[in-house]
Every structure is written in structure tokens, then in C-alpha cells.
Length: 496
Image 1: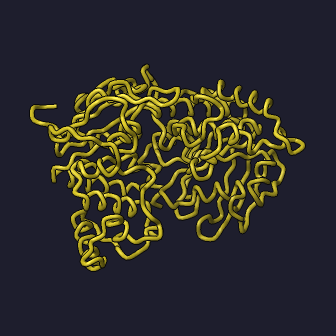
Image 2: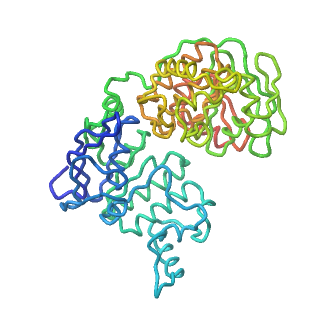
Image 3: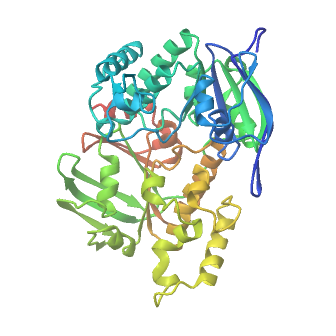
């Protein structure tokens, strides 16, 4: 950083958990009105460092200064009083309360013991006006979109007069339009002198919004550069500790005969007369904008929602799929868009999660064969390079990439012939992405039929053999050779 007292100075930060050294003497500085991108693989220490800054974890050692003054961030309240606000991926909002009530929760505006609702509403509207947006402040937050809930979190930070704002994967669940609006708000906050730490695995965003980038690996800061002084390959190499010559691994599998056939699939306006086929060893991508019907199609295939019409055939055999249980029995596996809510039981161990769809083998008489369970899961831990301290670790404690591998492991153990990957690398770092891509290629080489849903166009072009594009529940076009496609071609079909 250039001369002057920084807004934030963290020095020598260390933190250990049982069996894990999460941070090893990390220094981090941030200037007023600066956007600092904090990068690193899952498990690199980013979240731990930010939780220390937010008062959620105490550091083992190290010092923190705000504008040259030492601060003790022992609690979330102390952090807020120091001018720090952290917006985590999982928002800290009470769904049944409206925007005003969430913004002022715990610090209500009162007079003579009575809450001044009118005054709070007036201040809340002023906060949203400052952000350049209009919001119905009386609506319960459960009725807001993800982007609107994020705005409430930012308004909370401004109401606390935060000088430093941490944003953890803020664009993960936003549409492209909502991302553009978010970037506009970030630029306005930067112009107001607010410092922002921006954490994202979407490297293209970093080049658009950040002034500087700091990179962590295995709990150590391995680099720090102005954004103009670093390239995308250099970022990836610093994050993973090795050179990735190709972001997407090459695959030489020649697709074979048709395995999965879908005809006339329909459910209301969400999915309208969708038909396609996937061959042995083929990766078919479903592309389109948020709300195009891609995830809804996957849910119909997997029996999570009831279809109104349509036929599904595997290897020429018509399948009767009226529930996820039936889909699993037919040889289908789904890696859902939201692995935390739909793919894992977070409070259970990773071994229990692995076993759940395989209990017919692992518990044939109602009693789980723990030895066989441990042995089989251990083999997949080694094969998929799942990083975890032990098999009893709760799924909630794993990084995003390792959580995704656990979900994949349970379907591999089922010997699924059709695998549906819905946003397979959302919230996953570059190194773990590459490993997921390799696994997808290995599955294709084994003759599996793979349906991949992705909002990242480089991923669609880099991984798929063919691309189907959807718009408002319908297939609007097919690109036969994905590697020759351009993002512009796909977007034209997505807006059809």
C-alpha cells in the first residue's frame, strides 16, 4: 500500500483448530475507499481470517488496528463497534421480520421505552435511497429475493456506520443484472470512503471490481498485487501452488450410443415440452439465465417434483420416476444446486452422509455395518482426494469443494449410470474446480451419461460436448460442438 495510515492493519494473525493450523502469521492491510479481493482455495484460511475480523473467532495471536488504533475484536459486538460489518454467504436475517425490523434488531430506536417505528422506517428508506434502490421495507424478508436480502444486509452495515465491509461470495446466487447493480453499489460505497474486502471464486469479477488482490494458501499469505499487476493464470497458480496450464482438462472420450432419452417433459410454465438425449460418455450442458427452467428440469428427472407429462428412458427402458427414491433405484444421481440444503445433512458426519443413499447395501437387515461403511468411504476419500481430519467430521465443517466431493462419492457408490451436476463448481476455488472437472471426465470415460447445468459460460464451453440452451421453460437451441461455441451465441439463445 502507499503511504498513510491504513483503515485496517492485521499483523501476525494465527489461529489453530484441533488438528488444523488455519492461519500462520497472516498480515493484511486495507485503505479507505479501497476494494481488496481476498482469494484462496477452500480451506486456505479466508473464512477464518474474516471470522476473526468479525469477532466470531478469537485469534491465537496477532494484532488488529483500525486507523492506527489497536482494537480488540473479541466479540461480534466489539467488531461492529470498531466499524466492521461482515456479510456472510448465509445471511443473518430473521425471515419473519421485515427489512426495518432486521436493520434495527437489537438496537431499536426508542423514546420512553416505546419503539419509534415511524422513525426507523424513515431511516431505513434513507439507507436504501443511499444505495440507489427502492425496496418495500414492510415486507417480511422471507419474501425478498436473494439480491434484496443482500441489500438489507448492506443497509444494516450502513446503519451501523461501518467503515469496513466484508462481502463473502456476494454474487454466488445473483443474476447477471443483479451482479451489475451490486458492483454499482460497491463503487458508490468506495467513493464514500468505505473499505471493502471482497471474497469470490469468480475471478472475472475480481478484475472488474478490485483495486488490489491478496492470496492465501494453507493459512499463509503467498502474494499481494495491484489488480493491474497480475494475470488470471498467475492468480490461479498462486492459489493452488502449481501451474495449471489449462483451466479445463482435455478429454478424448468419443461419445457412444444414446443412454438417456427425455421426451416431452412438462410441468406448468417452468418446464414446457423439453426433449433431449445424452449418449454414453457425453457431457451435455444445459445453459440459460436464472429462471430458464434448467434446475426445474433436473428436479423432474430426479423425481423431486412431479412431472405433468413426458417420458424418460435409460438404455431403451422406460423409467417410472415418481420420487427421488425411484430415481436412485433407476440409476440416477443428482448433485443439487444447493449442496448444503439439498445434498447434505450438515450436522451429520461425512461418513453418515456417504452412507445415506447406500443403506440397502450397508445396512441390509436394518443394522449398519460400520466396518464396511468405513472401509468403503475410506476408499472414496482416497480416490477423490477428500480433505478431512477424520470420517466423523461434520459435513458443515468441510470446505465447499470437499462437500461437493462427498456428495459425488455417495453417488459413485450407488454405481449411478446418469449423473446430473447442477452448478457443480459454485462457490469452489480454482484448484478444487479442476479436480471436479477431472472427475467428470473420468466418469464420462467410464460411459456414464452426464447432464451439467452451469451459469458460468466458460465452464459450459470448456467442459461440455453439446449445449442445450433454455429460455422460459423451453429449449431454444442446441450447439452441437460446445468447444467451438462463443458466449455471445449462447446468450443470444438464452434471450430468445
